Length: 325
Image (cartoon, rainbow, N blue to C red; front, side, top):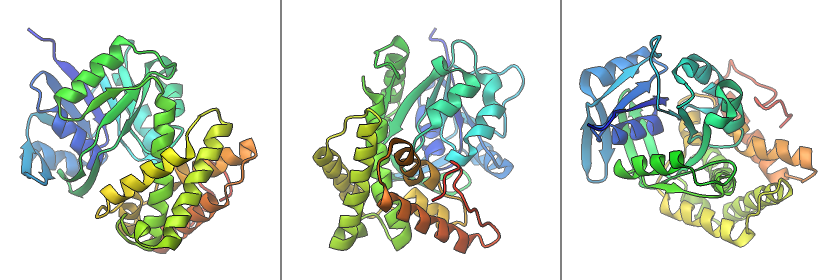
C-alpha cells in the first residue's frame, strides 16, 4: 500500500487554495491548509474548497483546514504560499511540522523567502520554486482560477535530487505542471521580472494587466523596469538575456490581459502589498551593488502611496526591507 504523503500548505488564499485543492485530488495525499482566519478554516471544513475554473466549478472535500498544526503533527512537504510580510510569523508557527525528512517549498512572489525560511527550518530543507498559475480569492474557501500554468522547482546548487524529482511528479499528478530546473535562481529572477514589470503598474493604473500593453507610455515604463531587474540580476551573478526576459514579460501581460494582479487585489481590499519583495527588493539590491533603479524606486513609491490611501491609519515610511523607497 502506498504511503500517504502528508502535505501542509501555509496560506489558504488564492494560491494556497488552488494548490490545496488540486493536490487533494490524489487520494494518496493528505492535504492540510493552515489558515490565518478561523472563518476560512470553518468554511472549508464545512463545505469543502470551491475552485471556479473556465470549465466549471470544482469542489474539493478531501482536505482539512486548521488555524495551526497540533503538537506531534509532521509534514513530508510544507508549501509556503502566504504573503511575503507574513512569512516569518507563519513559518515560526509551523516549524514543529518540519523534521529531517521534510521538504519546505516556497512558491511566493519576490526575493528573500528562501533565505528567511532557511534561517528558521534549516537551509538544507528549503527548495525554491516558481508558480505561473493565476488565481483570485473570491471569499473564504472559494478561489477563481484565472490562468493555468506550471510549477517549477529546483535545488539551490543546481543538482537534480530525488526529492525534487519526486515533488515534480507529485505536482504533475495533480494537474500542477511539475517541472525541475537546474537553474532555479534564474527562474525566480524571471518571475521577479514579470512581477516587477506588471504588478506595480497595473496597481497604479487600477486596471487589468493588458492595459499596460495597450499604451506605448506604460509599455515603455514596463520595459524600463524589467531592464533594471536584468541589470541588477547580472551584477548579482544571474545571467538573464534582456530580449528574452522582455518578450517573456510582454507575453505574460498579453496572456493575462484580463487578470487583476495580486498587488491591485491587495490595494482594493485595503491590505498591505508585497511591493517590498518585488520592486523594493530590486531597489535594495541595486543600492548594494551600485546599479541605478530609478523606475523600480518610483513604482514602489507610488504603490506605497496607494496603500496609504486605502489604509489611512497605516503610514509606513520605509519598506519592510529597511530601505528608503
